Image (tube, rainbow over all chains, first blue to last red; front, side, top):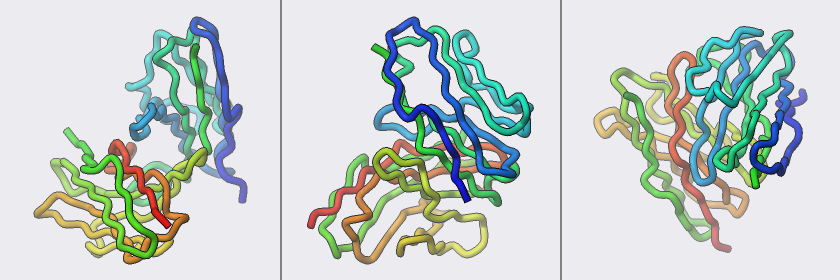
Length: 116
Length: 111
């Protein structure tokens, strides 16, 4: 079974440029999460999808970040324009359904973003 | 508010000696607690989780953790460290729909 796929793995851009990250969850997983992991810290949730609906985007900086999961499968996270403080690893995760006490969350390898 | 504290940012052990990684949580109700491991350039992998069944939880690769409500702790242990255990370890608190991760503990294993 393929795991969570993310691309690109690494991205270097200059500040004020746009950037996009792509995630393909495990087949059949309805719940998709985007996290940001700053250096030396644990992941922090940005947005959670149930199928194509964003059910928790309270931590997503909406002035510059956007996300979509149009067909309820793969998802794209965009930053426009990027700032120096956006340098981090962006992790995608999926689970079969909500209820993380009972459903395991599977993580992709992440995209390491460097903003110069 | 819920929070997770990992008391040591870095732990170093010799190969073959015991591992102890400490985690404390703050929650107004009974939590679900997790430990994840992250190897360099890899995603997080679930080691074990506590969901109000047995207080001693066994995970993969010989790791286990004990839930102690009176101490609000969920420390991770392994009797004998292996070189492949060198990684970043994250304790997490989970509700229905989100996980709050601690800041992580970096484990080094000295040959």
